[in-house]
Length: 206
Image (cartoon, rainbow, N blue to C red; front, side, top):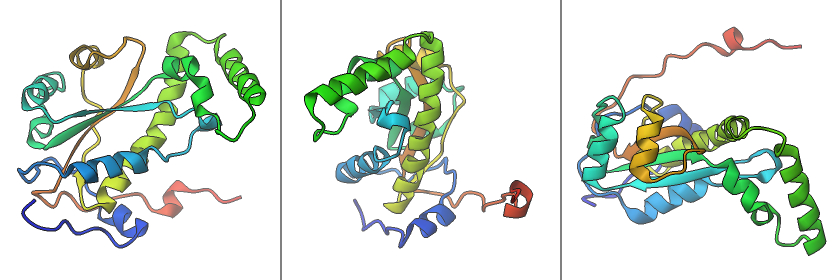
């Protein structure tokens, strides 16, 4: 790194200074920072603590070029030093349900809770389970964006891509739901200032 990346001073500061950035400083990403961003994102809450989100991190220019082609040629995919693919895999959750349960639980309680979780989702189709898991993964997406900004990095969450092509490029199973593609790096532009509805416009108090 050429200099020290300034961190934000608070969660409020991270939220208020976050922008959707599409042009990034051309330098390698600090790998310890990358892992910390992923660690913080993984602390997001989820229903029943199922944690259905998974991360695929791409830092290979050739693969990034292929991903750009599968993302309607959006240039930020190759301009960023890293691209995080956030996806939901509910089938993996069900196959390894015991791993989501607290280690201090007794073995019998783990078995009971894991079976209860599986029983609640087995009547659903794979597509229905995937949609539910994707809604949970969007919570992790919010955490990811704020965690990155908190450590001095910037992102742009992307929903414009061809899922089947992205899955094929990364070797992901057909059942996974891709939540977002997130280019990550240091901003080389300031981005647009926030323009949001007021709390009064968005909220009804009872």
